Length: 332
Image (cartoon, rainbow, N blue to C red; front, side, top):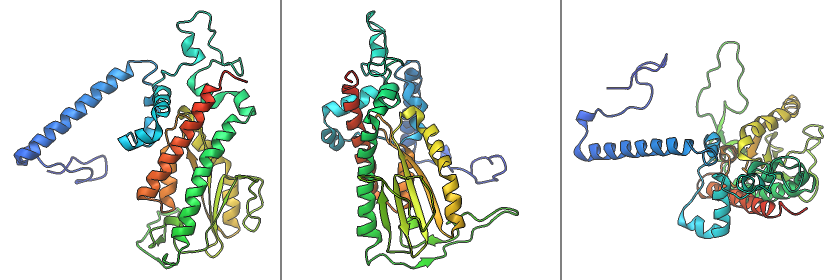
């Protein structure tokens, strides 16, 4: 029997499950084990949710990718970095705010700004003194360099190679409701497997590293400086990435803020006859990578091992820099 109709979706909508009476013995054993695991996971979530500090990661876990904790990754990261990441995620990192709970002489204030409470989110991404001293900018540029190097390699060695076919095929029909507008870039899909980069071999990558990035004047006049710009003159197509390394609690807010920031530039670029794509990507200060980075990478054709490497290395670099920010948070 199919699943029950969901709202107005009709019969057959949703996941189909084989009836219990038609399952074989092995299939029943597998289904029982699956349900037992689900119940155990739910019990653990309830237990963790009752803990004030350790349950805060539940507020943002749906916005991030799953962190690879394989033996290979554990050995590659090292004990100190893995210990820092776990302590930061589960709220057991020794901070002034935490130390004040058992030490009466500790006021809990941040040792840099001496104004706000020295919590994990404040120390890693919210201290104005650390911001003015360039500590957060240093971490941001380290993560951006990882992204820029891997995206540049992808464009030069894969997309721009002679093996990349520049043919573009129409794979389907897009239905537009009455009074609606066609979404840019959705009517035609590239057959080359490189997403929005398909159909050209002249992609250029610009990054806001080493020297200030100037947005190409032939596309639009603006003072905005995206962190990463990819453009193809033959397709008259441009896309940019804006990177943020916020505390994981602010991933959603940072994402919307950065997208809104480039709305005017996006409209101007389209008015000048260029197609454009704007991506806001986030890598959490604790080393947990937001799903937005993976989604943006897939849009340009990064999949499989290259995608896993990008996510892993960006998370590792952010965690490594944040660890030093934490260790030096008591030194001006």
